[in-house]
Image 1: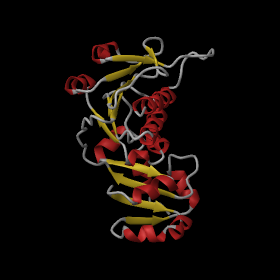
Image 2: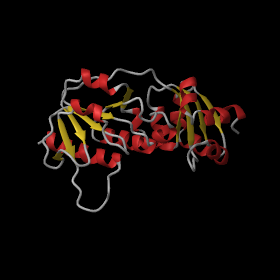
Image 3: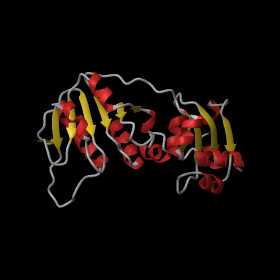
Image 4: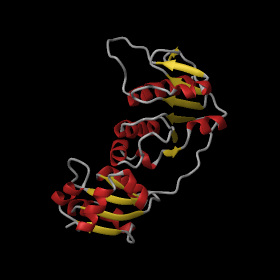
Length: 251
């Protein structure tokens, strides 16, 4: 069984203010927890079902210093943020923020006011797929340690570095070309030529890129529409542009 103390903590960590207060976050589900076990993240408590414990006993034996709680599937699913969690949940320490680095031969994703945690998690996964290891988020962007972000990232949060800072500060220090995604302006992404390295700026789901950042953008790009849809989801747009960046820069 999971004690009331841990149920209370798990519920609290679903809110940003308590994640900030305790410097802890949740990792849930078999895939995410298994990937977590092979990293340097500091796990405070691991709650698992008997089936998960038996199936992965070798991996669990490696982390002898971590508190482990064995519980039944019903209790775990009840405590978890997932609709169904029949495997594992980890309470993990939030690592100290690391400094981003400008890499001349790679891209940094810059995110302006992305609110939906599912979108942010998917963007992490997209960045990981296309070999982009750094994301810079505006302070208004949703918290990367939101459980929905962690779940949607499918383990990519472990490999993609995320920093939060004022984008004016970031762009004032940036030396690389900046490509900004617009709904109805700029060069067709399918014909655009991208440099070997740079910054891709994606704007909010509702308002796009804030006008304050237009002065930093060297190249405006857009994804042409061939149908009647009003707009594209920001994570889908990010994937399309990243694919074209890799295609173009590798030619």
